[in-house]
Image 1 (cartoon, rainbow, N blue to C red):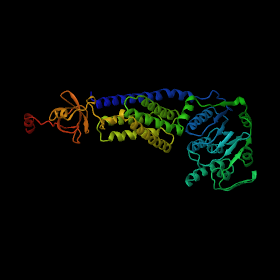
Image 2 (image 1 turned 180 degrees about the horizontal axis):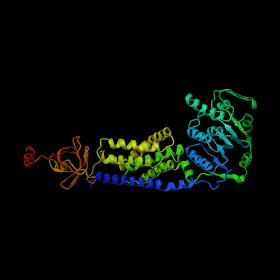
Image 3 (image 1 turned 60 degrees about the horizontal axis):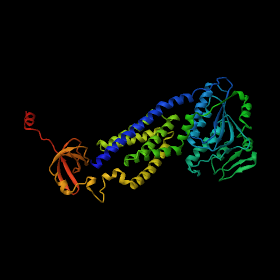
Image 4 (image 1 turned 45 degrees about the horizontal axis):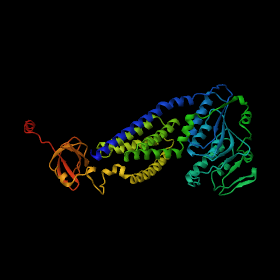
Length: 475
């Protein structure tokens, strides 16, 4: 049996299994999760007027948190709650997610109070400033809202700083808080006097306020020891509290939609499937790749960023890329498949620019890893079909020149498309051949035109019309 044909069959089988696995994983996501969503979004049991909905913000501000808070706010609205209390302890997070949450707080039909239990740093301080009331626990802090990159280094882009500064300032002005102090939490170049606490924020510094300082400058309405004390300050008792906690699906979604996690999942998905295709005999990389992509789309679906369209785009793109390997399309199927894959991944994300960045990092990293693995294990890869080995043996189906020349002038049929290399059948034997650069479809009559070293060159036999056919055509 021809070695290259065996490899081709194995690759086809592996690609088919990959597609079936992807389809099954996506159907599981689409079929199972809506039940979880429905259960998670069911209204809370308390529908009494005067209830206080307590919702935790106890981790980094990101897109998954925004969806959880949206559910909690909707439940409070449907229950006609008197207050929403956000228990806050966060180091900050994504600016876009913070902006969306701030708008949700600002536009809420139910009054919102923030209770800072430890810190409301960076994006957390912006969310707090949008609330109707801010309460702080003794020893807690608020502020330090300068923009930083993923490594924690300050970003000094004038446009970004100006935008974030205006957002902080507008949030402070909502409830007559000192907008200059909000500016000083963001802009290192400002000088901000704070006579209430006998301090001046100098150039190069960022304002971060303790609970006592925040109370004195008007950035806190009171210092209270517990959530129950906050509820009492709002005129209610602990019996009125309705706790809103994230569901299992929402917790998973928050983890899976973290930018670092999404980039890692994309990297594993791309690398796993690529390794599975180019290195026959594995199996595990393909399974891991499918699982990674399924988790990526599940997180997006669970967080409410996308619907079934996104994973259908991805699956359709994968199918088109597979078809490109076996159907001559001059690259059209490959281009359409790549575009569909990228569109599916990007549309599934919360933010387009973040998705493109994650995809770029993942693709570049996967390309490096796959290339290294292909080089290290090239003896097992499909590259063997295109590379002459240093030693040739009859066991590896290499024919001597004398054996090859016996096929000169003989006719046969193409078994695979020749573009220009492929396989033909001559006198019951499968032979690797090439054309002179032209394409010949499969199942076409061919003739061996030339034997050149190790190559057998063939041409297509063009059927001439018979004399009867020619006579009929002439008439």
